[in-house]
Amino acid sequence: MSHGAPAGARTESADIRQLRAAALPRARTGWQSGYQARLRLTDAVVVGATLIAAYGLQLALGGASPSSSIEPMQAAAGLLLATAWLAALATNRAYDVRFFGRGMSEYQKVLDATWKSFSLIVLIAWVTAYSEARTLLLVAFPLGMVGLVASRYAWRQHLLRQRRRGDGGLTILLAVGSREQTGRLIRLLNGAPEQEFVVVGVCMPTGGLRQGERVGGVPVLGDLSAVGQTAHEVGAGAVAVCSSHEITADVVRQLGWELERYGVDLMLTAELADVAVPRITVSPAPGMSLLHVDTPRFVGPKFSVKQVMDWVLTAVLTILVLPILLAITLAVATTSRGPVFYLSQRVGRGGRLFPMVKFRTMYVGADRDVPALAAVNEADGPLFKMRADPRISRVGRVLRRYSLDELPQLFNVLCGHMSLVGPRPPLPHEVAAYEERMKRRLLVKPGMTGLWQVTGRSDLSWEEAVRLDVYYAENWTPFLDLLILAQTARAVVSGRGAY
Image (cartoon, rainbow, N blue to C red; front, side):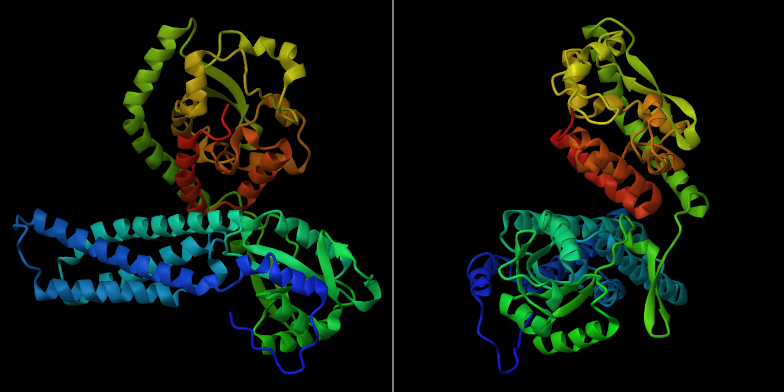
């Protein structure tokens, strides 16, 4: 982002000079253009490789030799699809810097663009009676969709690693508002560099200024009279305005005009905790804009789609892991006395009890020893967790580390007790201690995996695990489920947070 400063710039303060000389060079916002170029190149490679694979399969199924050439009609169709696909990605804002590394919108843009481009091919194939389009639809569509999402995910992980190391990929913010509100913004953003934003300075109304003050460890650089120039001097990519009774609509309007001269973006904070972006729409009203937050829905077509996804994917997974299930059954049966499976009463959707099945990983009667081990409990809230639990068998420790003990829950999903993705299945005594907000976890089926699984598993605090479960229950989408399933594989292989 360019920062063209108007004439008459003031003398830089010591705080600003220190900021520019230390942390700011590593966090410059110029990374966006390079990241955009890499995404465009990667997408072009994925699209090209997908079409080559589709046509290769078409030739193989048709009995043609590898040296057979592609007919002009096929070449034209492939070129049209590639052009339409890449154009759809561009026009659907798949390269918008505001979506890089943030939430699910980046992936959603890629999927929407893929749907649009293939819809065009379907229409053309129908009009021209081009029968070979079937291979494009059956092979290129799923292969390309997976390839594009996977490449975006890989680039996002690279970007997040850069941010955590402080090697770039950050957007510098100047916070504007009261001491309390800017302090909250600093705590939320500066403690999570993977979220992209880092607050380096604060400007507040004149009445609240104190000489040499710092808010959340960040220096106060001035008042509202020169926000644009201050943002330019510290190299900020955006100014985040927090709510304050002294910052009126007229002040925000004037600030927007001022920032426009310096090429700095204006952001307004809206403290809608744990509300996903798809639930928010902006409704125009005379003299203002209203944020409309959709009410969470726990019935209807969306959950019918989830049920079908559960049945289909679980049936496929059960068939694929059947040899593993048999091997684990043999290992548990031959290494310790007792039943192979362990049944645990859990609370499902609507508070209904169901028997959750797992491979047994402890000796028989281990539940009765929990009170004796209460003094060494490492979990907070009503949970009981120990990193070196003496009740776990040698085979059980391996099963738990890689979550293999939970594979029999596939049968719970097939029976309708659970979902592949959902909140952690709670015990009855945990539910008895629930506060009102925690009960919202019971509005959806518990899952074999969920946000708690891919975020930290047993390393999470009770409070954070509950927050993630409630967030999932209120903001679930089919795409979020697919993303969690993909991330679960990585979490399970790493074994991080499992014990």
